[in-house]
Amino acid sequence: MRPDLYPSIVEFGNDGILVCDERLRIEYANRMASEITGYSNTELLSMNITSLFSQSNLPLFNDLFTQSRSDERKVRVEIQLLTSGREVKEVEVCLVLSRSAEGEAKTYAYLRDITARKRIEKELRDANEFFKNLIESSVDGIIAADLKGNIFIFNKGAEDLTGHKAEEVVGRIHITKIYPAGIAKDVMTKLRSPDHGGVGKLAPFQLTVLDKAGKEIPIQISAALIYDGAGKEVASVGIFTDLRPRITIEKRLEETHLQLVSSEKMASLGKLAAGIAHEINNPLGGILIYASLMMEDLPEGDPKRQDLARIVQETSRCKDIVKSLLEFARQTEPKMEPTDINRAITDGLFFLENQALFHNIRIVKKLDPDLPSPRGNAGQLKQVFMNIIVNAAEAIHGSGTLTITTSVKPDHRSILVEFTDTGEGIPEENLTRIFDPFFTTKDIGKGTGLGLATSYGIIEGHGGRISVKSKVGEGTTFTIELPIHSGKQTFLENQPIQDEGVNDEFDHANPSEGEPLSL
Image: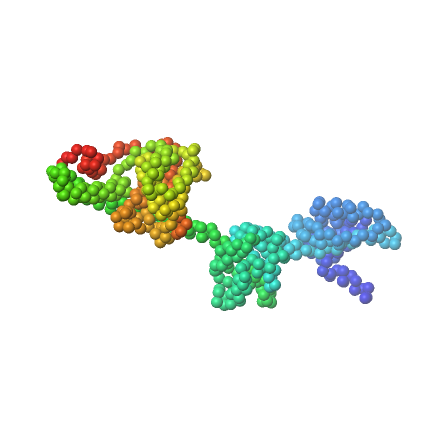
């Protein structure tokens, strides 16, 4: 090459070039050096090269220039340069230390402005870090796989969903192992079809995936294909939403809705029951009184006395029905006081265990001896317990077991009373109706259908809940939940007990109770 071209090549090269003497004073600077540093050529020729760089870079120069004068070194570093306008630039510097034959030391510095490249690299790092954090922070599972099915993204949400750890999956498990057999292929077919959100996209739909133990998990998936710059498929990514919490909430909402409907129905039927009770109260009272008076006027051997006795008996039965209606409607407020639930159960069993219905039934009592005493009406609660016990015995049809359990809920806010029998069970279609008034599966004359309805009303009146679980052929469990109060009385408990007058009239009109008759 012609030597006369060297100056032009150096002057108009793409890199800044600085030549320094032994004291690092700049002796030569080309055009690009002025452009990079912002100093004119004249300014540069009056400067020391170290003044171009920040103080943090000086140890590098000190280390470089304290080496033996006889050595030649070449160092490439990336450092920050301060321009004439105090702007910081990222530059790549190649330093060459050379010594001539006469022993004169020279330093050649080649400068390349890499500020734009560094900015782009930082932006790329920040963007990658952002998207990595975005993927990892997602509550949904995000799984990406290449076209061979090798998983390369498996975020924290996917770990929580499947039970796998990312290190166990990435590069180790094929994407088909995440799905039940044949599902992965079906997903890819849908992704490439225009019928499920467009080619390369998959609109959300429901399916199941497999957890680490092989158990199927209901999920909602949306997916997409990933293409390179040439439009070629390179990977697929899916977003997996765990549907288990949603299914649980929907089930609870459905149960709550049924409870609300049942409560509204009970309230309406309670008002109806109260109205019916009051309407038939006076006619029944008249029938009972006059039939009893007619019996007193007839001699002992008169055959009509038997007919009148039947009238009194059936009227008394109607009295019990009306009484149940009134209790269901809660027209009177019972006396509420601390109640020994275990004793109420034991007292109820005392009257029932010797009956023929219970002769072949084993009764297992698991009563918590430290059970708190909730505020309630012992008589009403005993009525509820006896009704459930009798129903259980009738459902067993012969020999079987009835287990009665009392316990405190873990939150210590309420107690549980459970009655579990080994009877025939309740058909599913009847489970939502068993607390309805007048609903009964018993033969005509053997039940009014008010027992469980009245029990429901009593437990609701105590601020509790009553529920049932049953399976045909396996038995039934009734669960009663009663709140544990802090000892403060409610407003209703401080009010005087109202007397509707209905029960008093019947009690005085019933000769079997030994009370005098009066008009």
